[in-house]
Image (cartoon, rainbow, N blue to C red; front, top):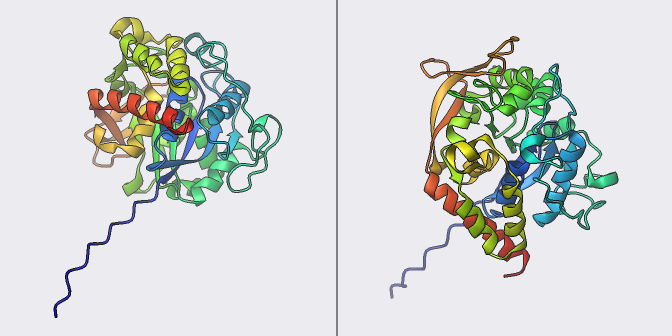
Length: 342
């Protein structure tokens, strides 16, 4: 007697990708962290490392701790990294992100201020892990994480200076920074690169990156393709959830140059996180990258040679803007639902 065919076995779900977010929160950094937290089946934040940038390190590290609490991730360690650029003068963007870095929105400290992070990371005062951000990046690289770097690249550069072999240990590096055709600090330079061009050049021109895992770069040319309109922000606030209301309030205080010129707000850093989850939303093109570190009007300019036969990065050149914008709202709402037990 022939036995009936057995039912096919369901394929096990893929494990989420472990990511480290090196950031300078920052309103768009905040949206990036919340987006990652809203996609637990696809990505898991292994650590947050803070750098100087949009505001000073004391505030970016504090903001990272508070965003960790808002996102419901008390187990994620937060490490403070470098407080200043490698050689350049300190430069911030408080005029865009507000004096506290979050558009004037004050987040609660949360109840995880002295908790022990994932993996037994001992934490000190203020909820910060004891290890320096650079040392944390070195350790996380050894575990094969994907690094999403959305602030000035000082922490990443110092990591490569201290331990060059870490470049080959990361699963992938995704960077928000630079501008191929335009800047937002000067006509030629984007903020993250302009703030520490020596660090950006160190990271983007290193020969240590494996060919199959070369950096993915989100320049302004890509991030300005998907702007959040005032109506979109109002709709986000109207969902009624705590995360969405706070995100909308922060975005309301986000005074970007693109707001007046283009009628919307670019959430640059969220796109870098989105690539680790939905890379199909983005079109890339290989190029060889350099960064101008000379003094003068071109300082901080990102130079992309798309004709090079030896490309060093994949540059994002296209975005499915409607899909990204809709998906971002859906994911933030889903985080509210998850945190409220809905």
